[in-house]
Image 1 (cartoon, rainbow, N blue to C red):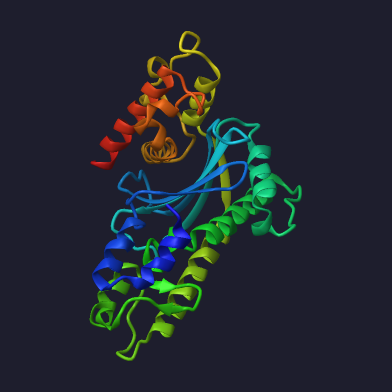
Image 2: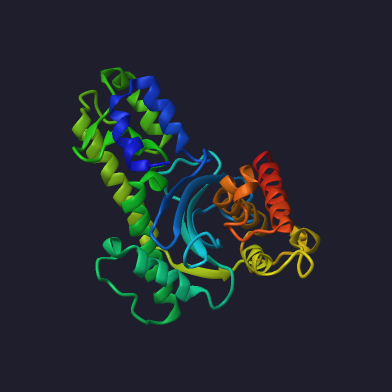
Length: 311
């Protein structure tokens, strides 16, 4: 999906069509994809009920094995909200970088520096202590997804209601009677009856900046995600050397001290979305360096993601 084109075309839609279109990029409604030159960038918003302890508002950054890209990996950015929580909220924020192995961080840095030069604008990832370095990398990715996806992952579709180029609401006056209900859905309070398009656009932009700042103030961490590790190994081996379907047992996966079930579900969803076109069109599997055993694994993950979405 070409997000920028879609948003610009939204100004020609009526009220009902705009609302329907905004649902496409809301939490749990599909994903977006764009090319970065040497890699692919994917993004989506998800919801979850699977929390062992306190609920949090999370951003996840997955480095997904993907041999269709020049660097052999794609970058997937995901925001996950507890079910029923609006995009603008007071929950604690958390950022987590998912790697396929302990030595994959330079690959992620390469994607940011080599393939998003305009976004980082000659900035370099300086070598600090690991914690500072992770925060810096997460900040770089946040700037990149803000530039490419126009805030969609932060506001969950509300950005479709404004034209970011002129800062005006694209919906007609028919939107005004329902604006209070619409804003409350995304965590914004409706103030006054004299709201106009420019005031609405200003409030949405300020809300987006506030959410982004909350994430930047949160500490980023990284984990070696066992599902990504297994997929990486499977792509590099033949069916006779390593069959993921035979070796995969979700009950045995360890994802550190994090909520295992939620992270497993989100990882499956990210991989499934990344390879969605390949699973639907198996004739392209050779280009992705996927064997028949890998295709079986992707179909299994699709089923697993579907089952967890229904819980």
